[in-house]
Amino acid sequence: MGRSARKYLEVAVVTARSSLAYPVDLLARAGFMAVVIFVFVQLWTVTFGLSGHASVAGFDLPRMVWYLVLTETIIMSCPRTFSRIDQEVKGGDLAYTLNRPYNYALFQFATYLGGALLALPINFAVGATIALALAGPPSIPAPAWPAVLVVMILAMSLNFVVELTIGLLAFWFEDTFAFFWIYQKTVFTLGGLFLPLDLFPSALRQVAANLPFTSIAYRPARLAADFDLSSFLSTVAMQVFWLIVLGAVATIIYRRGVRRIDLNGG
Image (cartoon, one colour):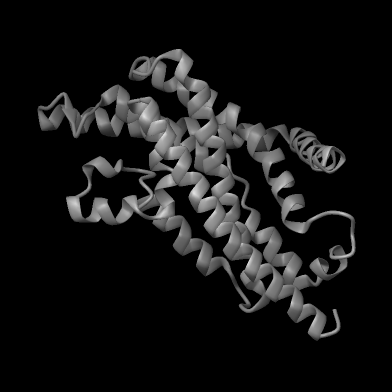
């Protein structure tokens, strides 16, 4: 087990080093992160000013800005894995990897983490700098940030499982981008990427709260706006639950897809 774990750790390290070979790409993403957070700060500053209220649904300006820093950091730090898997399936490369001494899903996850964990601190540092300068410090205590980091990593892991599932649909569909587009836009809306669920109508909020998308964006970011231990534990429990459920779905799709390769002679 230890040797196997080291193998995938090396894959993650190699991926991170490869990403460092393209500093312009990292700087471009960080620059986009800066623009997004700056625009959101201006938008919510005007919104609160025109509304005449200091807070809405428990969110004042600093809480709202730090919430958005977390959601944008999570989503913008996730490499687009589904397209690579899609191409490997359609191009036949997956058939050649089946006999290699590693688990395909774990190899892809290690590659994904290598890129994600490199981008995460950069994006967060950029967003946090702008948030501190324009909206003030976060409301949660410093000792709570390691817990927030845990749920952020779980959120990105959950995003990977969804993208893995979408990419593997290439066994049956010529183009999986439509599935990714639907998933992405659902995270934007029902996942709470741009707007906390606290501002949703009650009926819609209850529906969205029971979907896996909130565990990717809303639930982790909500902790950065208003941290408490019970919310942290419930967030972790929900993320683990969906990782197990969606991981099982991805496993079934993978096995059926591999069976198609075997039936067709590779």
